[in-house]
Structures are given as C-alpha cells and as structure tokens.
Length: 157
Length: 208
Image (cartoon, rainbow over all chains, first blue to last red; front, side, top):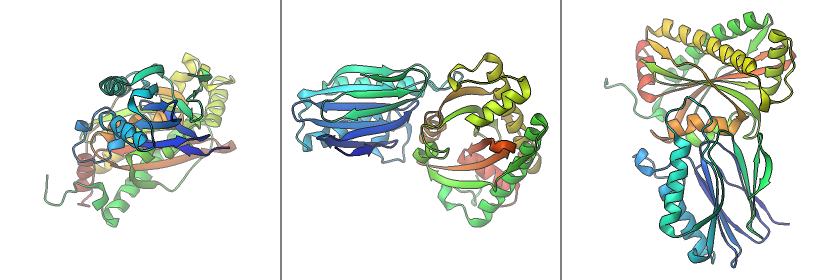
C-alpha cells in the first residue's frame, strides 16, 4: 500500500510506486498531473493563477501556471522521468460564480495548456471549465486520474 | 496615503486588530438580528475571528475542502473595496427552506430557482446589515454588488476570493463570524477587505 500525499493550493508533489497524489476542491484553480509511464513517476501541481506577472511581490513559483509547470517537470526529471515520455491530464478551471468577470478559471486553463505545448507535453485527458468543483486523485502505478465532483460523481480520466 | 498607513497586513498592531474586531462584532450583531427576524428564531453568534493568513489557507476555513456548502458572494466598491461572503452549511439550508417555504431540500445539486433566490436574499440582507453598521461607524461609503450564488465544495467556492486576493499579495486579512440558530444550523460571514480599504477604515476609527 502506497502513501496518500496531499497537494495544497499553490503547491506541487511528486510520487512513485503505489503512492496516490490528491488535491482537493479545485474551483477556478487548475490541477496538472504529469506522468512518465516508463519511469512510473507522477507529479501533480495545483495553480491558483495563470501568470506570475499578476503579482509582483510573490516568489511562490508553484502558485502560477507559467512558473509551476516548468518546476514540476524539472523536479520529475530529478526523479528519473523524461520530458518526451510525459503525458498530461488536467482538471479544474471552473467558473464557480456566474457574475465573476475576472474569468480566472478560463485564464488558468489557457495558461496551463500553453505551458504544456511549449514543453511539448501531450494532454491525453482533461476535465476543465464549467461551473463545479473537482477533487483530483492521481495514481502513480498506472497514471490513472480520478475526478470527484458533487454534480458528476466520480469518473476516471 | 498618510505616513501612518500600513502597506503590509502583517504590520497591524494589537490596537488596530482590536478596532477591526470590534466593528466586526457590531456589524455581526446587526446581521444576527436580521437573520433571527427572518427565521423567527433565536440566533447565537460566535466571538468574531480575525485572521491574517496565507491566501491559500482561505480555502481551509470552512470545515474541510469537500464540505458541501452554499456560498453567496458580493463584491464591495467605493471607499471600502473587497469581498463579502455568506456561507451556509447544509443543515442551515434545509431548515431555512422548511421554515420559509415549507419544503424539503433533497440535495445541494438540485436547488430550485426559488431556493436559490431565498439564499441570495438572506445573504444580501445579512451582508447589508453588517456593512450598514460598518458604514455608520466609519462614515465611509460602501457599495455592495448584487449577490451571486454557488452550491459546491467549500474549498472550490473559497478558491474564488483566494484568486482575487492572490493577485495582490500572499497574505489576507479575514474577518469571520459564525451564526448558530436553534437545531445547530450554522452560517458564516466572511469579509476580506483590500489593504487600502483597511487603512481607510482604521483612519476613520482614529486607529492609524
């Protein structure tokens, strides 16, 4: 039995073996799960915002899509993963309130997808947008990702 | 901005924190009375909690990230800018709908339009009475937006204020008040003012 490792907001974690990475209640935030099937190394990032230019006095690289994904890839390579073998599954980026004009969720999705494209990492599954919260569970032994939500129940992507 | 104004939430002194707690307390007293009148019931309130926390931790305040709640979000403008939210726990929702409409709610997923209107209106009334007290004490003008509603996991709902405040810094000041009615029905009022607005409030109270 592996460990269950929680990833907070503006955070990321790496795992292998039978470990499970969990991030709870993604709203407008986006969760990005990267997996190298050969090395069986998995990583999960939970970003709050799209771009570090939004906030000048903050050094937390895990908070922003444009800095967090690069850092996740770097840390996974240290654990033996290779970028060309990595695939991505992403979830979140919801618009929780209808009147909210900031469109944080949508911007987060675009920023994460852009970053993955730049790095040449293929997105093999996604459950993004709409208007509901999601919990993401990522399994290191086979790379499957379970999405839990109140509206749609549980589904594997 | 005057020489005494703060530019960092963590530099607030005890005197200033007490002043903020006190206005939170008076505002909450009014909001509790409004809720009690609405429900024809007794409503108790907690001691106001004033927290200075990491933006990320805002999502942890309401009984776990997957706790099912309804959040009513309103934004503040003019002299005081920021966000005010009412968060209702599941039991609160069912008791309120039973009291006011004589109906049962089977799940948060399929609230009717009428249910949603009722919760938005309660959120509107409670936050308006809270802010009226704040405006009266400070002489500041506060404009409140129309309410917006979301029924979902507490963490996902709180990610919205977290993302708004995450754009301007990594720390936020949060005033929280819990209201508990008969049958242990619980709701929370959360106010997150921007730092410039905090300065305006403190100045008006002579607590610079």
